[in-house]
Length: 312
Image (cartoon, rainbow, N blue to C red; front, side):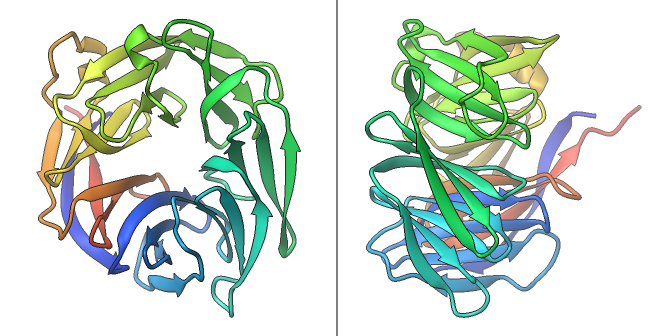
């Protein structure tokens, strides 16, 4: 059944600094959030207590990826750092440079960094080390995101608004199995959240999101005007989640997305967190009972239950 509501918002943890990035590791079920000024890594078990904070000697942080329960990768400005041994005397090791984006795979083990020069670097866990392998990307990539089995790449130049390409595996090196031309208004959208049924192309601070729906082996892209600037976006199954600067978090189910026109659609459900600071980062945990995780500019980490529509 599709999702129909968001409920039970609760504060889980706090970093006391602006949260900039979030990530989900399916096994054993962890949410990671990274703050900046100071840089702190918060790791929260999805199904229980025991959240922990690790202080990092970095000047800033923008993105985070978990390769395992004990190894993380953080983008700090243009540099990429591996954090080895999160729970036992962590050690920082630089594993990449000149990066403008970092994406992780929910299954862990590997992450993908996009370079300013258009190249990409696969960051792979090898026992207790993280090794980087840089390779050329065919075309001009704007953004990457990874699912368990695929790489979703937003490319420039294929159309007025660019093109979404879906590649098998953890890098865009194999040829794409699916493509979708994006509308012209999507040309400045520079982030992507990928899913098996829905992929969202967006930009923090913009009010429009390009939703790309997968059905019957085809991709269909449509621009959805949400009415207010989004702080961050997440997807799960056929649903889109958006956080707004006024503290609202909204769910748009597949039916709303399919019916969207030029007018701003009414969300399926909306919750106002009442948290300190503005929402800045979202992550979805699909392990067990689905949940939406929100990080704020004041460093708070919140969790909300994602409720399915009841049958009958």
